[in-house]
Image (cartoon, rainbow, N blue to C red; front, side, top):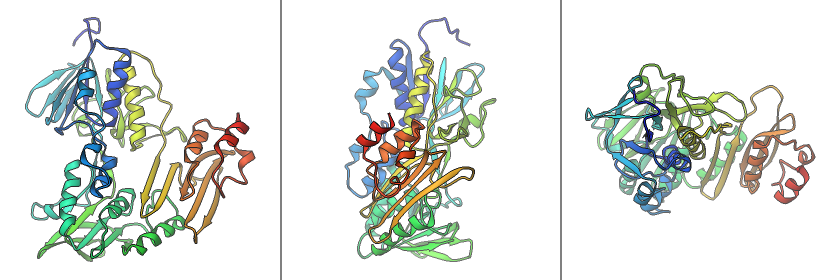
Length: 421
């Protein structure tokens, strides 16, 4: 094992997206002499999967997907090993093995391997050309090509990704259907009342829904593919896009003795795993939820950035505590904008829901309070104060004086802040 006193440290990062890029920034804030090496199974520079629906819709060019260019790696003195997968970690010797049997030593290691889309069943080779998830640029380009000619499209899952894909590829002359296992759209994020407003807008665009339909597999039928539901229905389409969630890419840690994994890789408040000198960040990690204090995976871009920078600072020897993340999403589809921040549903106890709904105008606001402190919000259309609400959650401020107005209309930031401080 390399001594910690033997000179410049070797920082090794597995992954090349939000957590990795921000870990590089964090390391270089405090240490300009160490070596940094990034390993990625993908061949290109870091990009944002969050933006792929906009690329599919042709709202942004491909180059906009990339969050850094070659100059970033050069300026931060990063060695890149791209297009090669890390397959094993030897923690006692502090080595990482790659798929070509080479090995790299490290003093500090960050696992930032992200997550991968879930499929309801394995997809055979004969069906694969017609079925896609959406996580990578390659996935996006596959959907673009197939959607160009498809007359019947099925989206499996009415979550954030499924609705974004529908927004990106829906067009006149196409029969687009969304199959969802739950009773309404966005079942993990919103209640049935808010969901009905969003569903109505999509139906106005010609989109059909099949609820309480869990897809269990796929089969080929002529020139189309069929998604087979648990009820035995066969839903035919020229293109099937699956958006039913992701699983953290913990395989590398699973094959490495000693790294604790629950749902994701378990980390402490400094991004450390239970194994010395090994850190984790981003969608693969299970860190603290700021609101509940419980450890969970919080799979969003901003949390990955925060965790990555925290990991990088700690890897460089600067003790930096992660106060916790929160779920937050913004969805813009068919002229509607939905923001969910923190808790989106009451979880029992003392959680109180303040709600305002105007179906005619498509407005819905729900603010969740615990002891007069905001712990979550669902904002449809009227969401100008989403940033302020996030600030109020993070600062755990008592909002009693605004309680009567909070649900009906966005808070005025200046007045709210002057009253609260």
